[in-house]
Length: 288
Image (cartoon, rainbow, N blue to C red):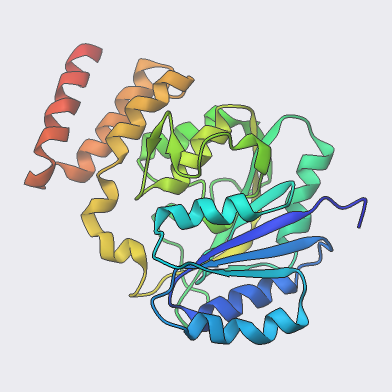
């Protein structure tokens, strides 16, 4: 294994033993030979722990930790801190990896300089694992694989007010490159778009790779956390748009204006976003 850097697949699990089992199996099927699996269990019952016991007897590469109390966002950090690999790939407990995901992504780190993040197109699946049409965020960005400046990829997400870079499952990165806690950007902890916060932190430092083939499977189902959050999922976008300019994202006034207008279109009909609407109007006045 000496020529293969260790990749840590870290799974913050919560009350989904059935889909977690499928997620683990998709990691065990990886063609890349040097992978460890770190599972930090935030569940409210013992179903995940019972499901995982046979795996722990058979696969030394799997490490399981049961949290004594619910850690929520800190569970993501516990996973990160317990990982021993040079590379980190989060895996949501209801998503899946393509069997060549890790191998194809590590290749770019080995062959090209200053790569800080590798992502890919992702295939949406339903609760049964069947392929379903993409949602707006998962539409393919490019028809071919590209290496691009990190700020270019970030600006696409920021100007659309949409995480087109990918959910936690999608992205592989070097552990040492994420210098703030996962989900922290410019000193602020984001809870609803913590993945985007991490991606911006990485993309501010170098290049990104977008692989045009689907290397992960994003499961859409009624019990999804994003569905429960509803409109709240948009509430952190304005703060991250404003903060991103400090890192050179949205560098032109036109890009910044496009991002503000995109967010405005999403929230303008909802009174609870009144403060954000006023802040956007003030920003747009300055730009005009």
